[in-house]
Amino acid sequence: MRKILLATTALVAAGGVSAASAIDISGSYGVEYYSESNTGGSADAADVSGDDFYDDGLISFSGETTADNGLTYGGKMTLNHAGNIEDQGLYISGDFGYFMAGATDGVVDGMDNFMTPGSAIPENGATTTNGAAANLMTNTMIADNPGTEKIGYRSREISGFQVGATYEDAGTDATSNNDVTGYIVTYDAGFAKVGYANGTTNSTTSNGANTGRSQYGLGTTLGGITISAGFGTQKTAGANGAADTSKIDTRDVGLQYSIDDSTGIYGVFTTSEEKIGSNAGDKMTSQTFGLTYTIAPGLSTILETASADYTDATAGSANSDGLNQTTAKIKVSF
Image 1 (cartoon, rainbow, N blue to C red):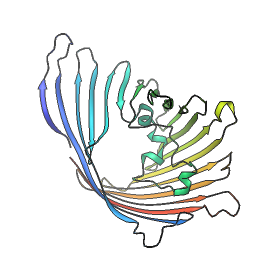
Image 2 (image 1 turned 90 degrees about the horizontal axis):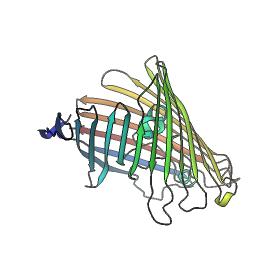
Image 3 (image 1 turned 30 degrees about the vertical axis):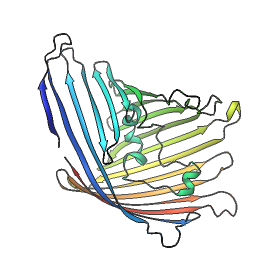
Image 4 (image 1 turned 180 degrees about the horizontal axis):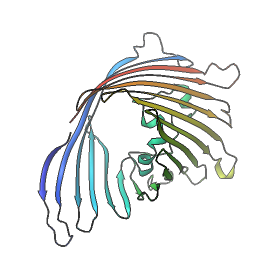
């Protein structure tokens, strides 16, 4: 649901604007029960509770105008429950396509959901403490930092093809050379959609130790089941022309099914493995299962269970660990 906070009609001859301009307010608030247990090399200490209640609230202010020349433009600012700005940006769309600028999710991130189930579907997802320390991945998407200012472009879809690009600048000082660039190409054949994305995060300095990610995948629906599959590779170059220090291959597969108009189920399965370097052979797998239920319009619940296992390839290593977690959440949207 959306409520109009302020509505006016702007008639500006110089800009050719002759459409209603409005500021809308919308939001959501959720309370989540979360339980977690860790085993193996990162086992919980004695008497660790492992469970708690969390809240997650957002309120968004947005507005949009369509000009006589056919351009549509607007912006949005979102505050979280702590009172901090979480997303902010502007956009312009028209026959040329779509352009955005701001500190929010990038264009590529908005175009890859059909083939990136590990980030698009789960409420929380799962990763072990030591698996994360080994830099193993929980999804196949290329890099995108929502809180960093960026610009992006998305073309119109032409004969099923669409392209998008993003660029974010890390800053101006000597250790802020880690700019992020990325692009994506998708093709919608009707019965299935396929895509390829590629991105680079530069080293914080000029030593050339950049990290590149590539991803390809597909999304389709068979027998009422929505299937998403992504395959990604992350490579980290050695400093000053040295050999690559890391090559991580990741695969995530997601399944979604609507039982009826109010109830849905999903499952996501992820595997990530280091292929080279000092951590070669390290592997992490995770499985996530969820149930969603809409009680009434604007009132929904979710129940999710997930587990992850990390295996350290070092012989006799006690570093291997596991995680199990449960999430139960109720949310209102307004």
